[in-house]
Structures are given as C-alpha cells and as structure tokens.
Length: 75
Image (cartoon, rainbow, N blue to C red):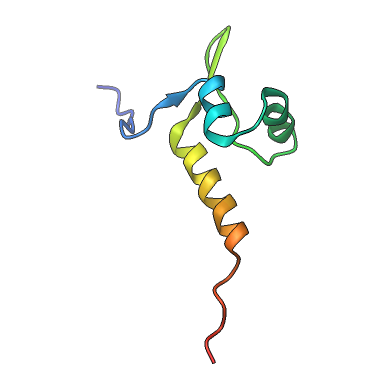
C-alpha cells in the first residue's frame, strides 16, 4: 500500500446532482466557483468532473448558519 488515506465516507456528485441539491443553475455554480463562493469541482478524467458530497454538504450548512445568524442573547 502506498500510504494514501481515502475517505470512503465521501462520494462524488455530478453537475446535475449538484444543481438539484443546491437549487442553482450550471452557470451560477461555475460563476460562484470563479468568485470563490462555491466548492471547486474535482477533475475525474479529461472530460469529467464531480464534486465532493461532503464539501457540498458543508457549503449548505454554512448557508443555513448565515441565514439563521447568531443565537439571540438571553436576558
């Protein structure tokens, strides 16, 4: 074994799956990637890309946290 650690709890999502999960169009996803606002894709082959499911889930959780804001202070 070469000592490479693989996280088998993650999987790869294709663009249509990412679009369905996050509710964004293909062009919006790529625009946000260029701006550094969305997880970058993984190059799988010369003609195929995918996204880490874990990275997309973290991105969604961050959006929820931004929406909900800090917890209100107790008086």
